[in-house]
Amino acid sequence: MCKIGILLLDRDFEHDIYELIKAFYPEGDIHSLYEKDEAVYDIFFTVKKDNDNFVIKYETKDQKGVASAEVIRGADGDSSQETHEKLMDAHELRKANKDSLKYALYNVLVKLTGRTLPWGNLTGIRPAKLAMGMIESGMKNTEIAQEMRERYLVSAKKTALAITIANRERALLQDIDYEHGYSLYVGIPFCPSICLYCSFSSYPLKLWAKRVDEYLDALCLEIRETARMMKNYKLDTIYIGGGTPTTLEPYQLKRLLDQLGESFGFDGLVEFTIEAGRPDSITREKLETIKEFPVTRISVNPQTMNQDTLEIIGRRHTVAQTIEAFHLARELNYNNINMDLIVGLPGEDISKVKYTLEKVKELSPDSLTVHSLAVKRAARLNMFKDKYQEMTFENNQEIMDLTQQTAYSMEMGPYYLYRQKNMKGNFENVGYAKVDKAGIYNILIMEEKQPIIALGAGGSSKLVFDHGKRIERVENVKDVTSYLARIDEMIERKRTGIGTWL
Ligand code: SF4
Image (cartoon, rainbow, N blue to C red; front, side, top):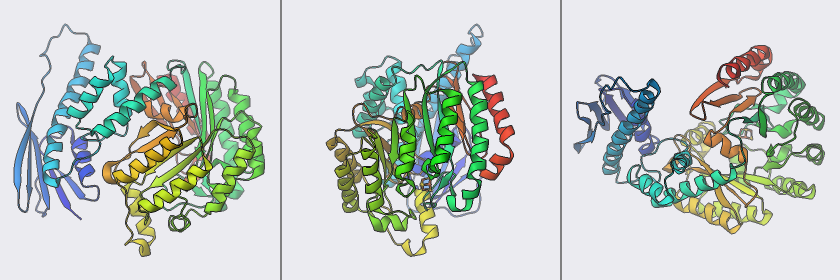
């Protein structure tokens, strides 16, 4: 493992510097330092700011060098400016300096590694939001493309992807009321078994089965109280996720959906999604129960169609169960079914991904979400499974291209995109959908255009206000036992947050 030191003589942009270096060395052991220490590093960076420049020095066993970037200065102290304008200027100035520093650092890293990154020097998780912002500021697609390629050094392919998605998102969101509308997320934190790569807060149903009704008691209380808090707003979309919502028994699903209908009402909903997620949780009776409500979209998630990989990653269901659950949903007239896939799973080379895509294509879902396995999750897989340590976690542009071509061949186009930290190869997660089957909630959560109120253990509400310019979060505790014990406190937190910000 490559040991990297970063000596920060100026702590501005510390996080951005770290993230960009991490993007080039995802498995590197990176240390941010504020004074030189005695340790030996394979690569050592020094970043400081003098009057006119950011200066980046680097040193390895056999090479050293220096690069600099201009420090951008704003108009000096005109005290007649309005405070708000000054704040905007300060924000924009900071961004301009961050871009300048990252541009230079990226070029240093390209020189050191001999590699470029598909997303250039962008380290944030929402590249389509950047493109959307430029569209909203009145820029033409060609101008956005130029900016993304020249300022952020994004590859031509990813630039095209981000702009395509931003334009499609814009069209899909045209009927959403950003000022008075909101979305609701409801979390069911139980799963049939815990997948080894899982990064959500989920608990094995077996251990919790006896307390699920108690969980629903608390959740229904939170639903009732939240509906009162949001009575002056219009509910646009509901997303029930987790965990796996279909771990609930039919009577529990009915109770939850009845409560949502009673408290919020379903009139005027643009979309209502339930993640059926794990095929081993899906039964005819549960799907029939859900069908009694105006649910518009479900997910049946294979992740892979290779049985041996399912066993490695601890998803205790079979490929046959996935196919059966999908057919069952179609038989019951579900006409908007999403499937989630993960690329970069242990031992899966392009031929295995190809096999999965062929099997998925035979089923013909309405949308497909392709996730790239993040390094952290891959490491967790290894941690748990010593015997798989030698397996490769492969993901490359060829695999990403194959997923895209297959989606296109199923008459789907990309409609949302996000990146995760430490994604191997610096790739992205992409949602593809047929013309009228895109998941609006997915776009809303990425573009941060309206509040998303999250209920249940681990729910993180995102309060978007001040015409979309500001965001505050209100978190519920993740642990189910604490959620049950502290439900009144969770409700009060929400009440305070909503009362203060919305
Ligand atoms: S099904 Fe999803 S939420 Fe549940 S354990 Fe697996 S990865 Fe985690």
